[in-house]
Image 1 (cartoon, rainbow, N blue to C red):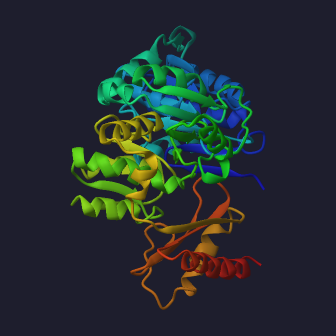
Image 2 (cartoon, rainbow, N blue to C red):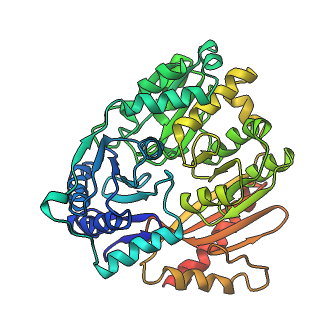
Image 3 (cartoon, rainbow, N blue to C red):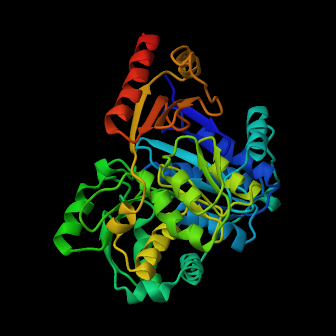
Length: 449
């Protein structure tokens, strides 16, 4: 069974199985054709398959007449930031984000520094399926150009956006686990720009992940231990391309990734009141925070593309997901964990609050996240079958199957990144959240057999 996930903003799969140099070249050529041979920024995370896919992608883009501005190992949010600064036609980030080491992906960025919207994604797919790639003569082939000091430009911009003086005065001691991913070489420049004391963990950009690159409590043991040993003020865990982040408090509590978005929103909506965008799988914490500040909440399908494009369409000020991805509209319309970490540090500094106190001010819910392997050919039919289980309830089918009541909710949907069915349940009572999830899991397991 070949595992290939094609979405509106790119393609992802297992390298050597579904992700091959030929497939990468075809998708990159389709993207180069769509941007009409304008310059394209290319960056990648540190996966050992990165150089292989990087070479294939560069060759294809050059063949369509695109100059390639090669950023090398580069976090996706920095690549997105630089697309607009360098007035490029778009960008291509080679990263599988939170997936494990055997996976890799191409994520395409438009000229506005955003992941492709559904219409732009459909254009790339049409070109790919038709195989109508632009081919240019030798004298019109693209050239590879290195980009110098782009990290300085990004962190200068981040420093100007945040109150770096307040962060510096607070003398915060910060532990950051980069999971040996694309963020690793950029931790020290961030610390210099914002003036905090950095204690880096897993900061060798060698592509060998010490744990799966998903910022969740199960992966936080090292950060917890170091915080307790050195008396740090806060800890952060990053995914491989710095689009997601989770937090650890000064007491050593590893917070669910669901806390990241409301931790930012609690202060951000005081400074920038307006609509908030999130998806249908995210905790009600953000709903309560937005309501407490009289800000409307808009829910979308799961995925950065849906969130950031709704951010613009709704003239919203903030977008994010329970996975730990947050986009601050006043900085850039992208899930940017450097900006997210910086804003949390700024909130701690200005309000004089510990991260545990900020988390303690949030409404507490209990959320359960499970997933069941399922062949891609069956996932949609199995999810549809779940409607029978909820036949006496009002069902929201905006993104899979979602049923809610006053105390909680449960959602069943197909994964956009893996051959899985995801089950997410939430309730104010932990045992009820567990029960909501288990009942659906039992039903699905019977359906799959």
